[in-house]
Length: 418
Ligand code: UGA
Picture 1 (tube, rainbow, N blue to C red):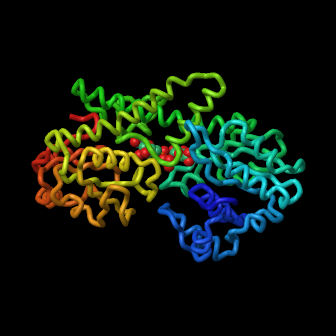
Picture 2 (cartoon, helix red, strand yellow):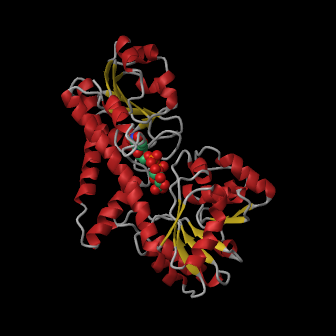
């Protein structure tokens, strides 16, 4: 396993748990040292337990040395970042660099598995960089959600394998057979497209429900009931229909931008996805407008409390988090933003971060709930109200009990509800 980030680490510990011998390498020596001692650097349910299990049984070992990692390996998983490059295009330089480095050290007939999300055609780029004609390169995109990655790995909806030859696909499938999931075997370009299309479709669903939420506010409907009524239709499905402050995270924004760029390069104008992105940008702005309105029309030199900084609950990941975007906007409008998140400590650019949700509310003209941490629901809102300058809440996750909040004298605005 090359790369011990969210994807690589989860894949490594889960494959070790399934009975394989796994060597995992990463350039970050602190991370590797910690992992060797059983310490997981991210918040991810179940990861620590499986890491300790793997270390204890000896099935899982760590190093900063990629050459050691690939020595005699039957399968080599590439789980390195593909950051957003110019104009949204995915930057594949890290993956190419790693391929160049490991090529000469691979065992004969090794199978290199590309798990990183890469532009269509990258499997062949990796093949060329490896410079080995006895080695096969396969695309095997991951569909793990942060926060439930271990569960998702061990109980997948599907496994996608993109290989140029059937024998290689069969060899790789053997690793996942115990998981009992449908296995889609296809060519590499199709597998790579499945990954982008899946994330883009989910982002589309979210922008759609956020747009319906805006409409609900305009016509006096309740988006929660609309989503419930829509979701019973199995063609629509009830998941991913919760309106929020806009989608974020390390994958959706990057992958949607990459797919738009990829389409453009291939001569197709993906207008639908461009709309999905605009709705998302507008969604951040809508939350800020709500905060402005509830704070009395202006936030200059006023205190604003922000609950939640991560892009969703049950993770400590703040990459492309709507909460940060909203905090930044409010900051630009002159607000003094004080934030609280159960997994975030220390200061952030322009935001004061405190380690207590009540302290964040002290003197605030409005509270914005940006992440759906369950603990926010159970706080003492009488105390929250008594600390605030004004009793006003923008609940961008529709998390709190609307009736109870209004009974407690709060001006309350959710998303798509009256
Ligand atoms: C996403 C996909 O769900 C995974 O299948 C995929 O493997 C992963 O990207 C990836 O490409 O690596 P993740 O980024 O962990 O996983 O986040 P999601 O749980 O999908 O949430 C994405 C965003 O949508 C978050 O900002 C979340 O708050 C928002 N969201 C989600 C909503 O606003 N409403 C919902 O009903 C669901």
